[in-house]
Length: 185
Image (cartoon, rainbow, N blue to C red; front, side):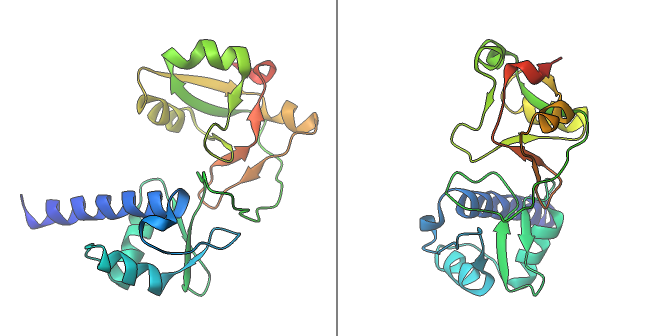
């Protein structure tokens, strides 16, 4: 393996670690996350090093900047970090409700369709249902779980009906659930 591919693999491994720790399991590294999902950067780095990860401030900033899904947010002063969305732990991102575009998209696997059209899109273990602006992004998301299918969400109609939406720092649209009445292909 070349040095570049080793470095790329290391960055992906760190990205997976951060996703897991900041969204689901802070105890994995022994860090604490506040009610808005933030944790101080320096203790995170120290705990990750102690767990055997090769990380420093520059590497962390690179993982944040180069993450393909822009999953992480550094605070304005650079002293704290959090996951942009996807949490299963109880946190409040403090995002203001936002008016969504008329149509958003959700990627899923074909084998999930019967359950989705019976019960709607549910957050499951996460705090929110994730929706995207583009069909292309939804295809990528759905492809992680099987043969991808893209659902159209009547987000404008949902909003008009009083259902709240939030836009995460990385552009992902969030809502609590999507009733089958707002779904189509």
